[in-house]
Image (cartoon, rainbow, N blue to C red; front, side):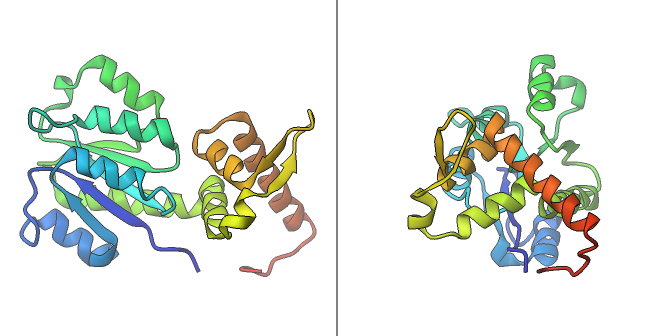
Length: 207
C-alpha cells in the first residue's frame, strides 16, 4: 500500500477552515495530510525536515517583507531534492513574473503555475495530478523504499560502481533526490528490471 501524499500549503492569504481551496484539499486528501503555513520560512523548514515523506508543495510566489519569496523557497527545495512537486500560485498576472524567475521555474521542474484567483478546483486538480504522478515515478518509489529501511541498513555499503566506489542506501537516496548520475542509473536499472519482469510474463501485481 502506498504511503499517503502530504500536501504542504505555503501561503499567507488563505484563511484556515474558511478558504474553499483549503477546505477542498482537506476533503480530498484528509485533514491530517494537509498542512498550511502562512510564513514562508516556517513552511520551507517543514518541507526540508520531512523529505522522507511523499510531498506536494502548493506555494505562493509573494510574501511579506522579511520572509523568503516563493521563488527563494522553490530554489532552496530544489537544492535538496528534485522529488517534491511544487505548484506555484500567484494573485498577479503571469506577465508580472520576471523572465529569469520563469526560466528558473521551468529549468528546475516546477510542476505548474496557476492563478490563485481562478477556480480553486483547477488548483485541486493540479494537486491531484501531481499526487498520481508522484505515486508512479520510479525515483519516488525508490525514495519511499529506502526511507523504510532501518538506519543500520541505510548506512551499510549497498553497491559498488565500476570504479570500485561503495555507496550506502543513504548515498543512493541523496543521489536520487539530487538527480546525479548514480541516482539516474539506479532509476534506469529499476526500469530495465521492470521490463524484464514483463517480458517474463510476470503479471501479478504487488509481489
